[in-house]
Each structure stands twice: as C-alpha cells, then as structure tokens.
Amino acid sequence: MSVPSQPSHPTAAALAQVGCSCMALGVSLFGLARLDLPITKYVRSVTTHIPGDQLTVPWMAFTSNWGDWIGQGWRLAFLSFFLLAIAWAFKKPSVKSVAIQTLIAHGIAALLANVLKHLIGRPRPKFVHSGDWQMSFSFVSGLDSFPSGHSTASFAVATVIAKRFPVAAPVCLGIALFVGISRVLRGSHFPTDVMGGAVIGILSGCVAAAPLGQWRTSLQEGLHYAAIAASSVLGVLWTLSHRMEDGMAGLVLVAVGTISIVGGLWGRKDHWVRGACSRHHTWQATASMLLMALGIAAMTTSPLVAGSVGCVCVATWFRHRTRAHEPKAQATHWVVLREGAVLGSLCLALLTLATARGILPFQ
Image (cartoon, rainbow, N blue to C red; front, side, top):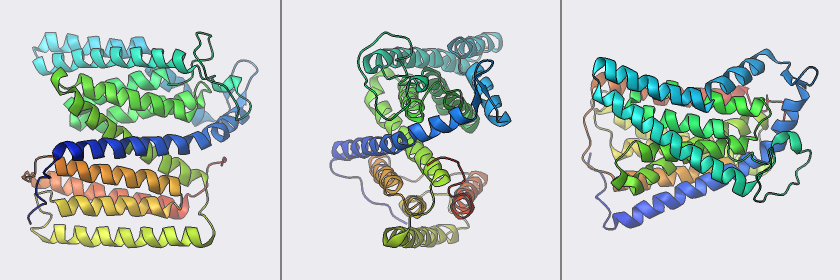
C-alpha cells in the first residue's frame, strides 16, 4: 500500500509537530496541577511524623526509600563512570560513547533544573497547606520544588541509554519513573514537579545522545516523547482517581471512544491480513494506532485527557509526514512482538477503564 507523499513544506510540518507537542504538554501539566493538592494531602494522611516522616503503607515506604536512593546525583554519575570502566576494560567504543553522553545529559539536566528551581521558587509540599502560593525568584531552602532534581537527572540518563540501547529502554525508563513516583510519595515534590523534571530530562537526554549540529531535530524528538509521557501519566492518574463523567457529555465521549477504537482495530485488521502482519509499517498502521489511542483517551470521559492525547496524535501524524516514507522491512519476530504489544496495551487500557476507575483515594 502506498503512503502519503512528502509534504511540500516539511518545515511547516515540523513546526506543527512542535506546536502540537507543546500544547499536549501544557494541557497535561494543567491537568496534573489539579491533582497536586489531592495527592499531597493523601500522602500526608498516610505519613506519621513521630519519629521522622514514615509512610504507613509498606509499598509506598519501599518506593520512597529506594527511589530516593537510586535517583541521587552521585549514584547516577557513578553509573556513567562504571560504563566508562566497562568500555575501557572490554574495548567497547559504543559503551564509551554512551557513558560520555550520559554525563553530558546529566550535566545539562542538573544545570537547567537548578536554574529553574531558583527562578520559579515554588514551595515544597510541606510548606503548602492550601491551593494558594506565590512563586518568585528565591535561594531559600524549601522554595525550590519545581522541577524535581532527582527526576530530571534520572530521566536524562535513562533517555540516553534508551536511545542507544532500545532493548533496555523499558527497564531504564521504568526505573526513572520509579524515582519520580518516590519523590511524590516522600513528600518532597508535587506531581507537576516530577513531570516538569521528566520533560527537562527527556529533552536533555535527546540532545546529548545526538550530534550537536542536530540539536533542533533532537529537541523536536524530545518534545514529542515528553508529550507522549505527560499525556499517558495524566490519563492513567485521572482514570484511577475519577469516576466516569455522568450526563450526556460522558456518554458522547464514550461513544466517540468506542467508534475510534473499532475504527482503529478495523484498520489494523487490514494490516494483519496483508501477509500475516505485514513487515512494512504503513501509514494506515500508524493511523489505526492513533485512532485507538484517541479512543482510549475519550473513554476516560475527561476533556483534558482527550485534548492532551489528541494533540499528541496530531503531532505524531505530522512527525510521520516529515520522516522518510520508504517503509522499512522488519524481522517477523519483531513484528509479532510489536503487534502483541499493541493489542496487549489496548486490552490493558480497556480493563483499567472497566475495573479500576476511581480506585485511588483522592480526587
């Protein structure tokens, strides 16, 4: 099957992708900001203060302690130097390159995070007891909540490793997410602080992992990945903390979501039939995935989630339009894994929507 031709103005398509990614990030952060105080209040309710701050929920305490331990800056730097030692001992130039890039990413992320911390001057959760606070330039300890330094550094290092060693991407990014969650459970940061740190870390990692002359393309790619991450986190948190919207608006969103998912599966069916999972990832396959993602977002019945994911889908479409259009053949086992991941993710999302709405004790 042929694919759409290259747009006559690729620069315009790239700018449109960047604009949609930024819109998705803005909507996601706005939505997460509405969960900042409810989540902070819940964490306080399960934290004892004598002696010290101790979480009474075992898994939360485990995550808080180990995430804080993993995400400390000197340990991430030690990882980079450990990779350098491995490269020297086994004469692996590729590993040496990754080690240097993780150090660069860590440095960029730390610089940006610390500058923003003092420019914004957001108070940490323990100093906030209502929704009103002022943010201004400050060097005072405790007024340095945004962004989370642990999250920024962890995602910067994880992004470099994930880009250079894609097989390790789920583990690396999962560990970075684990660190980010720990900062919220520890009461050190709001969810938006962690997400802000993740965005800066992803951008830093994308820039560090590519040649300096390609920094524009790297930032474009980083914004796209960051938008996907932010909209996904918003969708999961919103679903787990809110019931389905009542009334006509909720029914309309569910209906739109159902139609989109069915349409996406129908489009995917043609992709499967052509050669038992075609080894060419066509534009119809991309469109079907976007339809399913938009459908899942609509079924959360949250306009914020639907809007954020919708912007990501448009950005992804423009990204597809600006890339090379000759489909690349893939090995059959990778195709099977890819299609299994698509169906598995869809089933997991539908199961979550059906059984886990509003299970978190905050709204």
